[in-house]
Image (cartoon, rainbow, N blue to C red; front, side, top):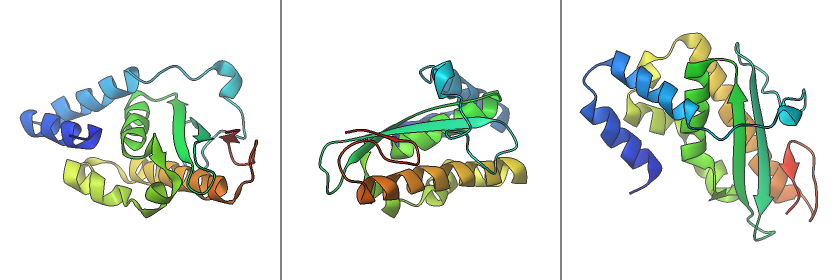
Length: 152
C-alpha cells in the first residue's frame, strides 16, 4: 500500500472535513525540518499566498534520477499540503514524477473540492515546481544543477 493509499484510507475513516483538515495539519507537523539556510529566494515557490520553500535532491540513475524533496511553509495547512505533495512525488523517478497527475490524487482524496482557490493555486504551484525540478534533473549532467537540484 502506498503512502497515498494509506492517506485515502485515513480520510475514509474521518467523518468530517474539520477532522480531515486536522489530519492534513498533522502531516505537515511531521515533515522533517527544512534548515534555515534553505529558506532562500531560489527555493521559494512562486504563486503561493503563503511562504513555501522546496528543495530537491536527485540521486541514482543519470537517465532517470530519483528525486527526494524537503519543504516548509509559514502556514500549517499549507505545510500539510507540502507533505501530501511529497507523498505523491518524493523518492520517485523523475519520469514517473512528470507522468503523475497530482490533480487526480487530490480528487481521490476529495481535497480538490475543499480547498480555497488560493490554496488550490498554491498547491498547483508546488506541483509545477516539483515537476520542473524533475525535468531539470533529467536534463542535468552529473553534479549540481540549477532549479533546486542538488548533486547526485
